[in-house]
Amino acid sequence: MAPRTGAIAEEKGVTSVKVDYKVGESREEICIAAKEWNADMVVIGRRGLKGLSEILLGSVSNYIVHHAPCSVMVVQHED
Image 1 (cartoon, one colour):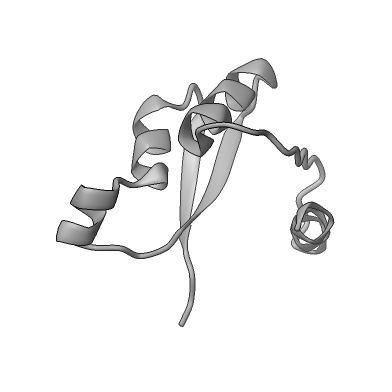
Image 2 (tube, rainbow, N blue to C red):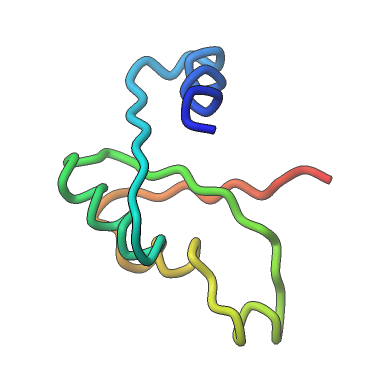
């Protein structure tokens, strides 16, 4: 997944991409990595859960939007 993600970003003209693997609670690890890397932006996908599903399951993207130390771009998957 990581090599593909970096390749897609570079195809779109992004010149600086850092991809890493972490073990732990994903939403917290992403925010920690953003702080450690002094990231300008985190780009994260969204599964599209709505309503009760999102409330009960939580939302990684929502957490990151509110806790990341940098800008966050949330991308919705096209159907």
